[in-house]
Amino acid sequence: MTPTNPSKYSVPVIKKDQPDDTYKFQPLPAPTGQYPYHLSLQQISPEVNEDTTVFHMFGDTGSIGNPAFQHFVAAAMAKQYESDEDEKPQFLYHLGDVVYTFGEADKYSTQFFEPYQKYPGPIFAIAGNHDSDVNPNAVKPYKSLDAFKAVFCDTERRPITFGRGVERKSMIQPNIYWTLKTPLANIIGLHSNVPKFGVVTPDQRRWFKEELKAAALEQSEKALIVALHHAPYSADINHGSSIPMIEFLEEAFEETGVLPDIVFSGHVHNYQRFAKKYKNGKVVPFIVAGAGGYDELHPVAQLSDPRFFTDSKLFEGVNLESYADNKHGFLKIAIKKTNGKLTLSGKYYTIPHEELPDIEMTTTLADQFVLDL
Image 1 (tube, one colour):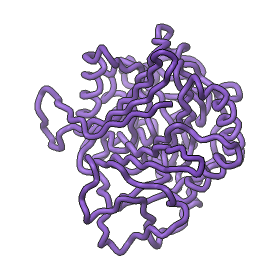
Image 2 (cartoon, rainbow, N blue to C red):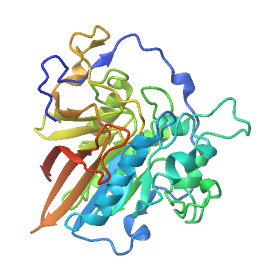
Image 3 (cartoon, one colour):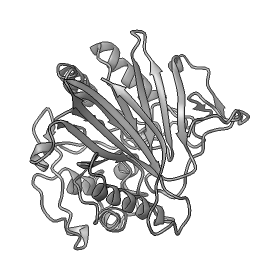
Image 4 (cartoon, helix red, strand yellow):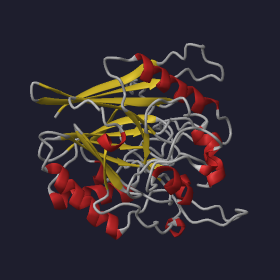
């Protein structure tokens, strides 16, 4: 969907008068694996194709109001997984907010295990603010990310006690922030914690810069992908852009001299594709894909809405090229090597926005893009 509506913003926005909620920051749990926190896709899927890396991606799937959309999106992806032979997905990468409203273990059975019990592939994830938050009124006290670690950052793959019999086993991600190594991509997954606009710890900042430099050594052979929950750029009415995440990323890019090929985020419950042109001429897409199932969607803001402004040097060279803000959906990313050349293509699919869509679970291709790497 091209943003041709002249009444809506076509650039990122900042929401005025937002309270400082950095006090909600939660300490990170200890890693379960060894530094520098790498996991090879081949460890999970030994038969992975060396010339093609294809995966699904989205965020913000948990739902406490109307869970129907979460199930519909999951069913549409599972159908695509089974039927698309040319670009068969190899895994799902979740951009955070697996469960709402707090990251309690008893929320995972209905919000994660049941909806994705028929998804054929492995599921990796970074944690969102809701996954990381702690319910102060919990009957049984717990620490931030206890349940997320049990599901995604285990030391071995095994059944999960609070999965209520669903066959999916735990994942062995080595840390809350980590890098997935695939044949054609390095996916650096960040943890941006609980506050509304994100917080990144000093240790993670140092690690991220090291990962950027290490991935840059392979950038001629592999795509360099950055994933984080809080969206750096957004034009939505609920959150708007995250100045802390923009400043964090740009400082890391500037210090290392390394630019990723693409940046993915969630947090905002819609789909937006921004393009940022850097001084060296490189254009980096910043994509928001947070309409994975939570029933409340976030529309792009109207130009007439007085709650927003766009006058920031942080937005120089950034434009909103496409969006879908009124339907749930998911991304399929395909990275291919042909005659020594690497391309990354993305397709964003939406599902019908009604409680009982057609039984065939028909999806609509709402946006697509191709990067020559």
